[in-house]
Length: 79
Image (tube, rainbow, N blue to C red; front, side):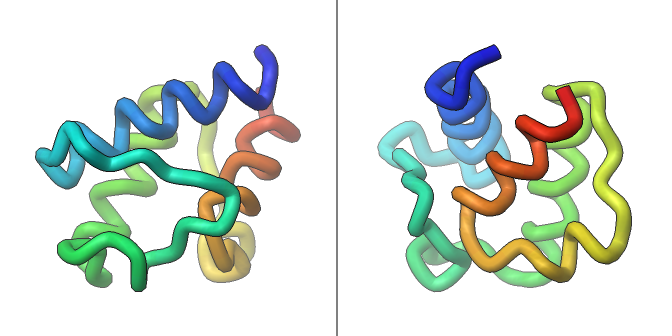
């Protein structure tokens, strides 16, 4: 799977979790960029990403992610 394909799937998950079809994430996207992205939604988002890609993040990976680009890098390393 290419990085572009990973981002397409990530975008779908973000749109579903936040119920907003206008969301388009980039490498630099952070929680500050999406209005409803709080700690509870972060848990829902991580769970949805794990289900979509069939992976599991460890706690260190979850807390180290600073933006969507880092999330994509971790996903790429696991698939």
